[in-house]
Image (tube, rainbow, N blue to C red; front, side):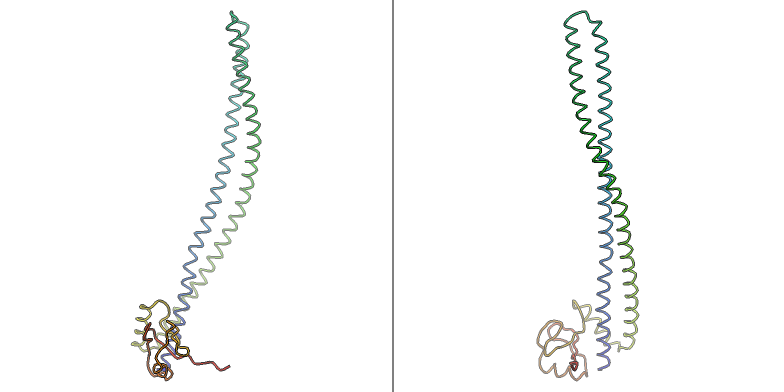
Amino acid sequence: MKEQIETLIRLQQIETESERVRAELAVIPRKTEELENRLAAFETALTDAVAHHDTLRKTYRSSETDLQTNEAAIKKSRERLGTVKTNKEYQALIREIEDTKRRNARLEDEMLGLLDEIEAADGQRKEREGEMVQFREHIAAEKETLDAAGAALQEKLAGLDADRESVEKRMDPPILEQFRQVLKRVNGPAVVPVRGRICDGCNMNIPPQMRNELSRHDSLKFCPFCHRIMYWEEKVPE
């Protein structure tokens, strides 16, 4: 029975390590998704920067068109000045020319401001594009590291599964079934040591008689409180 208990302890160690590896594996897809989300956010920021730059350029071209249209209107109005027959028509044309000149003056001021904005937006766009190249390389390297870590963990898990299968073959079927039932029922390890008189699974004091029985290693003992399989932890000589 002592050998079976020792085998149970080894089986629990494998199970604990497997749980740890599976937990690490479960994190990898989340980390990969986080990297992809960061890249998507960066790409969105770059797209916005390009769109802002394009919008400013379109606005500038539209203002150029308006300016040319207004200049043509001024020229046409000046040509008409020599053909008007009344003072009232003459004054109306003068006012129209002056109003158009004022609109053009405002347009030119706005276009000067737009040129500054376009220059700044163009610089920001180029900066974003340069950063994007580096950021994509960084994300690709991070994902490659995660993929490598995932592959190593999968390999380790496969090794643990092989170890589990080997250990289970050395166990009596009824004891193995008891272990599996406890493992399903409890949260955490199914096999725990007793240190002093305390069960390591629930931190409760076990009865003195049970502690004495544990030290004999002649049968399986279950904690009366958490119902885990217990074993007596031998003190290691210093």
